Image (spheres, rainbow, N blue to C red):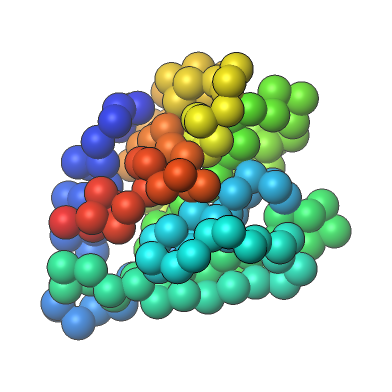
Length: 180
């Protein structure tokens, strides 16, 4: 796939995954702590994002849009929780990985975690959507720069997309953009 400002590839993939209009899609939302996963989830669910606390375990939200029912699993990203991520891989239809684009110091760490996820057999053919979050912060890396740093362009065995966004402001994350 590649990086762009639209999610055309993911949209067509979601349409293919939907064998019946009532099919529920399981979306796994992962990323390091403080990347903005829960804020993103709240935006997808059209909830207030003024008060967000670190996720100690997980959050689940069901989002319905245009015939899709998305069950989004937001799993905490603290280092002590990450070993448990694999317990949630089963039956995942789409992996959404959130990156704090303004945190250059943790870019290598987040890249290592993403690489480990993509090597897991249970996620082998699962499409990947990377949200390059916090684009509203001065000095944030662009989605294309993150794709380059994480060597996403070398992913040839799966459908992938990277999207710049600001979960706090709601830009680049609306459900209508994800599912139309």
